[in-house]
Length: 210
Image 1 (tube, rainbow, N blue to C red):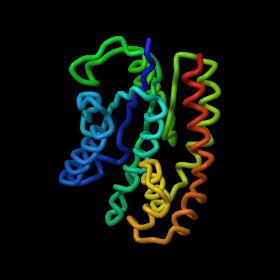
Image 2 (cartoon, one colour):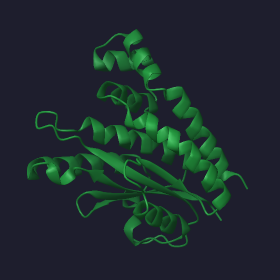
Image 3 (cartoon, helix red, strand yellow):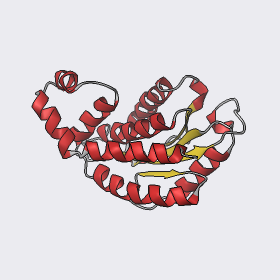
Image 4 (tube, rainbow, N blue to C red):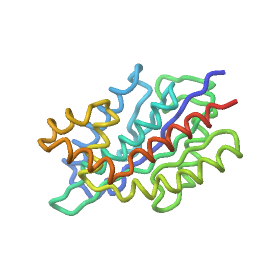
């Protein structure tokens, strides 16, 4: 059967925002999630600060997860010193039932994602689990380093990484952010993006290996 990736996540410090800002964040985030997938029902925000997304491509799910980590960081309320963030659990496996939306669907990928999310530790930003315990051990070791790198990203670095994953060139990013291309390149290096990118590529290949 086909292998899917299910993202389960929540928004850190969501309740500290004003009602108006919470509403705006939900609207913008839901629009973003649904823009990434073919079927609108495969992405939903629920309980206000939680979300779930079904991806048919594992590599895309990993990349979009990194973008989400950047997305919520960039929407922090700096005036009131409210740092937003997200925790994300990705379950990789089969989907046995597609309901009217992602929240009413069922299968291995959903179970792995949800259960692993409930077991995430404090400070853990990204967790990935497959049906294979041996693979999970290797993935956990790699993610331990990836999480440490991502936790240290500055606002400026997250801004650049988000656009880089979007497929923009360094010059295009420089133009959009009104900075120089060397400045963009410096942010990418300081974020250790090449190391993170290689780690994600390896995890994707490992997860799909028979």
